[in-house]
Image (cartoon, rainbow, N blue to C red; front, side):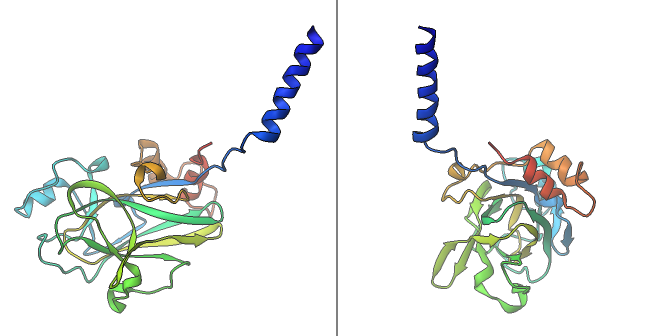
Length: 235
């Protein structure tokens, strides 16, 4: 009897090993507060809802994540935005294809775009100068904070962007293009999907913020995003 039970268990384990689908590889998720960028070059600046109200037009009805965001101040119908950027040093923990989601507010057709370059997949180019639409992000409009996947707004259509990287350091720049386009947070993932739920998109937690501020257990010569990505590889 005991032998029969053991044999049944062994057969069940063998079935699981040979016939059940393998568990998917762990994904990479890197959640970043925009206002904690490694470099913020004016006229891109850190803002709050009070700063918006000082412009004499309505602020988004809800607070940004952790109270701040980045933008080029101005009325939401003026255009502009020919200078300034936010730069993030992002260490990619493993080779793969990545997408980026932004937590944004975009009031109208004159305040709904950034330029985006991510080296070394993209060239070392200033799109504010070249006006290369390969790097133009047409932000989905909405007067409250919402997720939008970074796209490629070409003259012939808009397409979601993907970047292929080997493991190592990358440089992500969000360049101003139009006044009043607001960026609160970024989410980088190798889960390529058309909607935020499928991609597992989320705002930075307090732990994310602390890692972005301090790096915590980052090794000498390393970057905090590398450590965070390795910690946050979900099973």
